[in-house]
Image: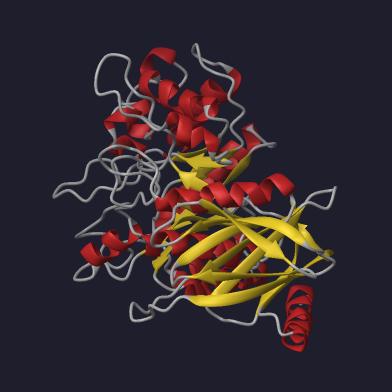
Length: 460
């Protein structure tokens, strides 16, 4: 409510002053949230051959969290012998207390590369999605409690050094992935969970209760909802009624509409509050630009890797910063992956989609969001300051309509600003995070934005 009031007040000032965008550093909103988390980590170039990698560029982004889902689809992370519980503990008939029953080798190397890049691991306990003709590992475990004990030893390996393990301090542990994806065809075409919703609820209850009992200070949550809200309407009351602790609620959505995602985030938040999980973080940990999964799929992948996809990413970060989302995790930084708009699929070099993450980190560095508003519905703005009064603003012009082609000038007013040179870092059709000097006079600057472009303005 306070955010909407501040925005309305700023817009009234906006119209009165004749400026289209107004930033008021005297009004603080809250912390800049981790809208720049991702799925998967860097690619470390081989020292022997095929020396392409993106470790240096990945590290420069200061990604806060990397989720490990679908890591097993890429050989550079260890391939099919990594991350998934079925690979870490390949013979379910073995004793979960026996260190020799586990294969941690590839996953150790992969997770260490994430940590070495300055990023925290967000570990998905479960299985990679199976689009193949036959499914192998998405069936409900034969013994829920034993599966939970296997997860316990995975956690102890990575946080406590069990079985010649590591001490990575991984805080977030997510149970499974998208159990609702095939809720209406789980018997004939399961890709993530080959069982009923009720079976999953009992499975989740068993695993969450066991892990929370062993690790009360960790964040144990899930279920990485693919987006079926009717499924969540069954899951959440079950967890409430069975008194299952839910440390975070994770969910996914793919669309071309930022507004639709924000609306869905509001419904998810309302659902959590309704069923007694008011303080539980809402984490959107898979999202990207998708118009459709069939006839529009190729078009969608082209756009993910275009300037429009980059502008969508920047707009999402800005919109969800103001919405009821506690963390965003872009899908996907895995390479090669058609969903990775940040790096070239062949060279692994940064593309235009890299720079929303680079720009957002500049806001995170300042730390505190301040009031900002745009009277143009096509333009989103997020501004931040530090304790010394240093101000930066991310301004995004995202257009879903491909027929919108005209550049447009925008006047930006910084309340309390003076005169002098400020710098904009512009990404558009011809420029990629290019430094442009702007002359500020009486607290105002003017900049022209192409459709589907974004700029970080550093007011100093």
